[in-house]
Image (tube, rainbow, N blue to C red; front, top):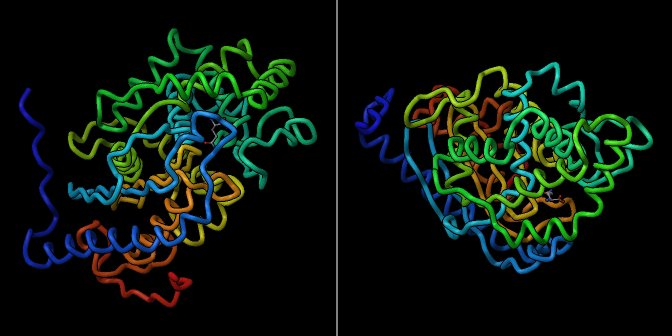
Length: 354
Ligand code: GLN
């Protein structure tokens, strides 16, 4: 097969372009430097024993632009388990397999304000989990996939490989075993939902798929590629192939914006202003609409289970490159990133990066 044709750039590769490329590269390095000074405030996840072995000093990031440029920094090549980042992929899979109506007959679309693994609202509010980004909601979605697909994990892997642009993505057997052994809280939610008729498959089958998807390995380039697909309305940035239907992209990005960082979602929306998703493996991705995909990795987590370094890197990039959805703040990077380069920036709109 001939290599895919490179997309024509909507602007010349002149000295302005080179200046912008250099600026993004520099900003990414600055973001890492800025974040490194804070990662000691976080702790690696230990409730899954295998994750406790992660190195809290790891820090890396990758940016991929709609124009086809890639930028890397730090430990960008280090693989980590996707954990809750995978919840967005199982949601895409479920929507593809069953459609919107069926999927949202089992799970809601509202933020909880609770921790990602909270069980409380399943008992006190409704037996239907509030959204697909918390554990209960993702387990319900996994249950739907188990019911709808012959081999749900094979379908997940096929989709994840396309979204990440890498055919060799696979599972970390040790993390999977560790999750299986330690996942009693997840099992409790699954059995409760099975008892109430939310899960239409065996609770053990639903959590098994959930543990597998969480234990799937990726690096920041894989996740930046996936984020760019989302930013690019579901199209593969290289081939132009429509990987995700636009109605699905709309739902997934909306839920990422409102619920992707659990009880830290509002703060992230204000600071970064992009749909994002984190995982306790230390990965985090964000999609800058029609502009770029970014992913960062740092296993030291804050009290909400979000990567300390990852959040800071993405927030820094958003503020310095003018990526916030609602700021109208487009800096010099606008032309390269496909945004409106004529808009004037007002950095005072943002809380200063300290
Ligand atoms: N596998 C993890 C769990 O079930 C995923 C949580 C997360 O990444 N926030 O707790």
